[in-house]
Image (cartoon, rainbow, N blue to C red; front, side, top):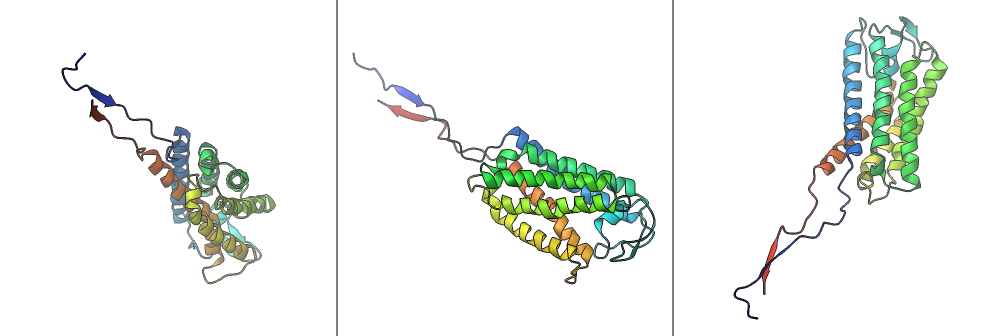
Length: 246
């Protein structure tokens, strides 16, 4: 039988292979949780410090001074007058911060990939989140020992989690950004060591504490942006159609 005309066949594109760029909706929710955690934490600090009648300094004062419930001279090693009228707001922010960091860690867990380093990183970051909840529930002038324990969980184990993230599998989303994790971890660990050893390199011990404690928030914002960017990146696909005749 003779064909009267060329047969035109539409060749459907084959599904694109998994590119590693797709992220689950849970990871996107985790990214949003991290962004909210860091943003509210910064905003509340600025609001609470504005309520002080005496000057509050990011170089001289600890973050925890914003949450102290009593007014008076505080800290035998670095005596300073502390009076934070809006301490309840700061302590609530500590707790919210920890809860949202934990939520983000659990929801975005797949972005670390698999393996010992990834699992350890997620575990230590969950511990870091618990430290923030603890310092919010127990202000420094209520129970200093428990408060210091919370600080150690944040600046000790939490920053160790950042370091472990620097060794996440390269094929994972966070593994591709391991340089960011390693740089932030190095800065945070060094700052924590100087803060606890009471060594002031010129930034003030309050400044050192912020480097040690805020590194996690900077990391979370960077990774949250990476997750959201990956979520909206179209996968590579074959041409929509191909025509051939025979």
